[in-house]
Structure formats: C-alpha cells, structure tokens
Image (tube, rainbow, N blue to C red):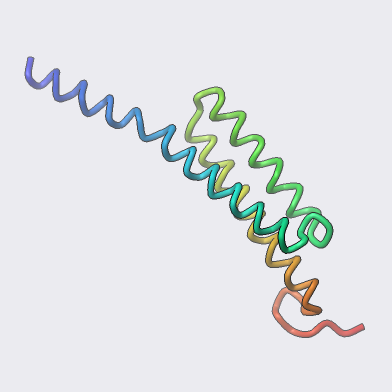
Length: 105
C-alpha cells in the first residue's frame, strides 16, 4: 500500500510539470516577440515576424487542448522566429546584412 501511495504522489508531481513548462515557454515567446516588435520586425522582417506570431497562437491553442508538449514545441519555434526577426530587423535598420557587414547600395 505504501508503494502505491508513493507511485500516486510521484505521478501527480510529474503531471503538474506540463502546464508549468508550457506556460514558461509561452511567456518567453511573448517576450521575444515584444523585443522583435520594438526592433521593427513587423515591417523589416515580415516573414519571421508572422511565423513567430502564428507559432505562438498555435502554442496557446495546443495548451488549451491540454497538449502541453505540443504547446512547448510551438512556443520554442515562436521564440526562435521572433529572435530571428529581431536580429534581421536590427541588421536591416543598422544598414548591415545578416553577417554584420555593411550593405552596399
């Protein structure tokens, strides 16, 4: 009986990790998207900007269906695209290409 109680306690603790991890990743993606917005990515890196926002929406949808791992995966993709959008926007606004070299007209 004692083993059963321990098994139930461990199972309950592990089940709570999904919502916490997915929420943390979604919040991270939101921060990355806000940083990209500040850098002007909505105008200077529209592909990456749109991908980041769509992946974030999909992450929220999957978490709403209690598919936490899929939510984490989509939130990580959203963060990655938001970071790429921010970097591209900053490079474009600064007059450099993606490798950091000055652009030639």
